Length: 278
Image (cartoon, rainbow, N blue to C red; front, side, top):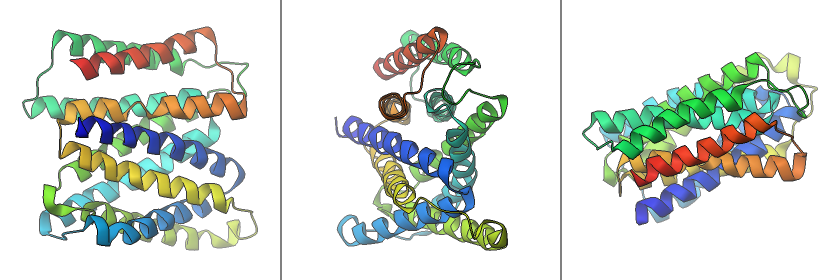
């Protein structure tokens, strides 16, 4: 039960984080947004350090370095895809790509896949195809570029999750802190290199900061969930986060989805349920 609650906490954190991050990149240059999100997340981790602890052992540091490297790619492509929109389509693509890889890793480790789980995995792939079809009447039509960014973001996101979940149980916040430092260094350098071009462009500090704080706690709760439960179960529950992003986008941005995309979203939700109960 603890693992399930933590996994749902991860889904909520990522869902809200992606919504605010997507809005921030629509109104601000990506290389101005990313350092803010990473700094905010790192500050929140440092504040929580005395409470949750952090053991910077060699395995924990290696896990953090791997997670941070993958997270760099995931951050860039996820934010780019959400910025291009529509959120209701790109978020599920990223989530399903991100969940399938950890799910397969869990199976490789010896975790069971039932018939129900097999059906859920197949349904997930079908749902990706449905929700990825371009629509002409959406607030922000889904383009080929946005779909590719969403897939690449899912691959980076999966690498980050596998990185933090591979850390020893006693590591505490250490892997996530190391990962954040890695991404902060890279994004800060990239921002400085392009500063002359983006210096005069406005940046949405509030939304960028909110996205950073929520995103980092998504990683923390995922890591803690995998320490209390199976990766197969935790990964699919955490992948529920697009439902939150889609709901926020529907309510506040009035994004519209065609019928086949709605079926795809329902199929994705059903796939996650089947995988969870398998």
